[in-house]
Every structure is written in C-alpha cells, then in structure tokens.
Length: 268
Image (tube, rainbow, N blue to C red):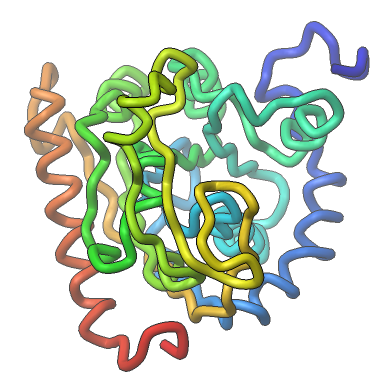
C-alpha cells in the first residue's frame, strides 16, 4: 500500500473527485452494456446513514456496485458517499488504494459503524461470493448463507435497513454450481475458499473461476425497497435471525415480482 493516506481511517480515504472520475468514465459504459435500470432511489433516506442490503450477482465480474453507484450520485451528488463493504482479499497494493478512494472499505463492524454514524450509505452483500455464484437455475432466490451480522450493525449504529434487489446478473453466464462441497473435499476451506464455482461462458466455455469468462450483456434491473426501522418493528434488542428472515422475505417478494416482469433470459 502506498503511504498516501497512511494512518487514516478506511472511510476517510474516500475521494469524491476520484469517485466522480470513475463514475463518469465507467458508469455510462456499464449502463449501456447491461441496459441497466435502478428503480425507486427516492426510497433511500435523503439524510443520515442507512444500511443498504442487497443480493449479489454476476460471479467474479459482478457489476452491482458499478450499476448502483452512478445512479445514486446522479441523484444525491458527491457530498454524501456510498461505501461498499468488501472482503479484505481484494485490497491488493495499488488496487486497494484505488478501491478505498472510490468508497470500497474492508467489511468490518467498526468500518461500517463509522461510515453509518457519519451519515453515509453503506452497501453490504451479506451473501458475498456464495450469493454471486448461485446457480443460474435458482438465480431468483435470496440466500445469505445464514449470515445475519448486518442486522446487529444496523441496530448498533441506529440506522434503518434498506433492502435492495437485482435481477439479470446470473444470466451474464451460465452458473452451474457453487462447488462448496468440492471446496470442502479439496481442503480449500482452510485457505478461506468456501466455494469452487463451475460456470459456462464466453470465450473459454467451462470455467472453475479460472479462466474467467466475459459477462454476457444481460439486462440488469435493480430496485430499492422501503426502509425497515428494525428497532421500531422488532424492539430494542431484536432477534437477528427473525429480522433477517423478514428482510429476506421482503426481498424475495420483490425479486419474484421482477422475475414475473422478465420475458426472456439475457434479453430482459
């Protein structure tokens, strides 16, 4: 890591000018390629922090953030950042510096709480890679693999949970299996590799992560749902599993609705 910004907290490394440049350069290309739509952004609180909880799609080249962030900044401007929680493994050398400047921060409870208390939107994908590599044949299923930590983060930070759903990302290639049982048999879980996904795509055909296939231009639609005030609905000391069950049920209903509106795979 470079010395620029050394000693700063993760959230303090966000650079609005750098983020604007990335959004202006990449945003239009991503939107055009995936014919992307982001609906109901006005459901996000206009001020204060909020934990945006979404399903995760598209495997290695998941476009979720690059679809959502440009539309957010177009509506709300660059005075209020969107921070995306990510696995520590993506913060490699200069790439890590660039990601932090663009608002990607390591997924820790402390980083999320700091950003939320500063009034930012924090985007979390509780299902992580397990979700983004879900089989295409079950693409419209909300599954966080039992992870509920996001609930406690929202409650402790005093912010609402804002569910968000996306459809189309699992059609960017044919995802066959997560390969979690294969990973266990090969002992990869000791190296924190919980999956060894299998997919078919262009140009390499069958892939087990590598070689990485290029995403097909599937139409992707993202929709923001109504905020959930966890304490108001579930009490001061809510059961995280009950809240998670409710969040996933709300998301599942919305994803099912988007699926009913979708006429053809890839084409949308």
